[in-house]
Image (tube, rainbow, N blue to C red; front, side, top):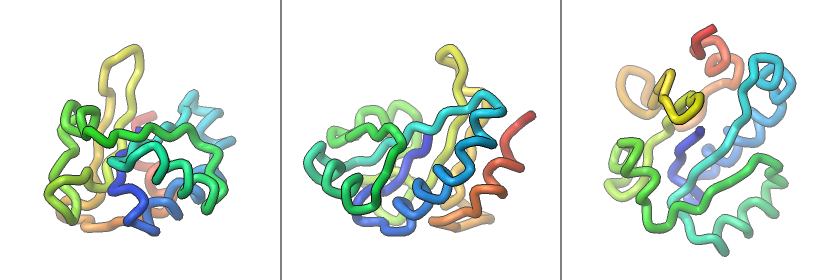
Length: 120
């Protein structure tokens, strides 16, 4: 799951597009990307169309999902998620990394770097 700041963050949507480009590598490892943004359904649908996103997207406008996974308030704004990724299996978080937090402080991470950081 990729938690991002949403439509206000062009780098976040570029991140999604670029991760889609390594979809075969993710699939080979049994990973499927889902993205969560704090946007309304309408805002998110417009961004999906604008960027040509194929990844499943969740509009978390009430920010409950972002809060439940402790990503809320860790981005550039106090009411949005940072740039966090988590790997889940059967409801259990196996790996978590927020690339906006020190020392990385990045709103975009090369997809191959994310892939390398994921546990085997």
